Image (cartoon, rainbow, N blue to C red):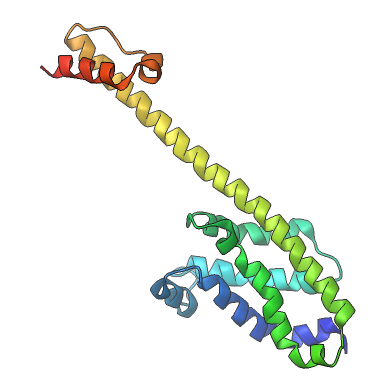
Length: 197
């Protein structure tokens, strides 16, 4: 019997423990809901995590990692974790913890010295997942920062438009976007005070 066969037999236990590690990043009440609510429509996050982790484990057990498939399954998990705003080390720790879970499941085999070469190959695949996960995490964090920057830009633009309307009504000079950036805060306050008199 090889490592792949034993891990396939222990698959359900591995997946359950692995799923629990990802829930550790959540508040206990949220974690309990994600773990116990089985309806995929009421619990799309838990369902997505569970389904993607199952497929990731299948890919890890395959002879070769299908990078395109692995990337898609990782994205399904990481795009949710990236929204939490916690450190990448905490968000992505679930991948590294898979090594500990597998080693716990294989305690007897490891003590007897079986599968050491196969286990090394398996753990290198997990390391590859971790590296890929970091890239994916950073891609989604950059998207979030871009969205926030665009929102701020839009909000600033609307404020400038409103300020210009007020200055038109009261016959004052118009603000330009360069003014907002270059004029010191005292001068801005003076202009606003003039308008609101």
